[in-house]
Length: 385
Image (cartoon, rainbow, N blue to C red):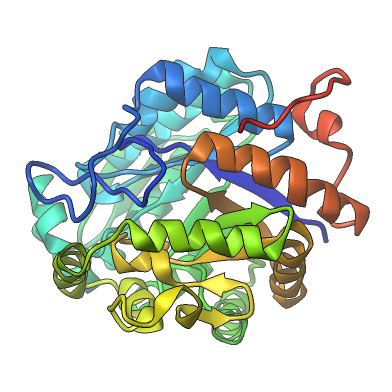
């Protein structure tokens, strides 16, 4: 079992500080310094492909650009890079989603990965016209994925459920290959759905002992369904030539925040219905007074990003070798896929790709050379400074 690295497309904007752009005036931090135009996102996609990342995650929500359209525009910019498209099953027809995925696979030569985001924020969901509660949303996702799988079978598919029903649902031709389904969720309502449908169960970056417990629960539920699920983790990264340099970069991110920004962000995050978000908030305690190393919740695992960012709130921090050590620790638990990001995303892709990926390759944890993974000729790429 080897490690599969992925990167992230910041479709809400990018910069040298922790940024998260909300709709209207809800931003808890500084505005993005780099707009998410297609030219800049293409730079990140090119870098990810050159460095040997498998794919790039593109988020979903009203605070970012649409993932389907953005990544479709980037298909011709790359040759081998895959696109992990996040979307919400409650706001689109399952037959239409199956059709879009099948079309995407054909025009991209099989480079689509799908990230199923059920949604943990009722305020956000209602913007899309979704008034289901938390558990109802996961029940609907269960039905949605059953329909999508059925439509991809190549035969007209009928389904009658509590939330969704279709009759004779089909597509022009089934996708080839069928896109892998990535799925996250930590609640009792979420885990059985993951066990029934996910190809890759994604967790946010909790300490290894908590991740091991979650993996065990999902694995047992999947075995009851007669299935095997692979596991992935979503993390940020700050990797430098030395540990001191990496922690100095983490300190810069923390120093750019103020108590008012943190308090505002934490008030918004506290309203989330997501069990995973509550687990993220519990890791850092919600304040700046602990200092940069006081937010280190496991050797090399830093919770400072979660002070103002929803979703993934922890980062791997350290020298290239130390970051590789922590990746190896997660890998020993059963984590195969690492979905990573950093501020700014272009520069951090190079720091990780030219620092940590060679270290992982040296340890035998990567399949093939960087150029083989990227499908590129032998070249030397210089890190962005």
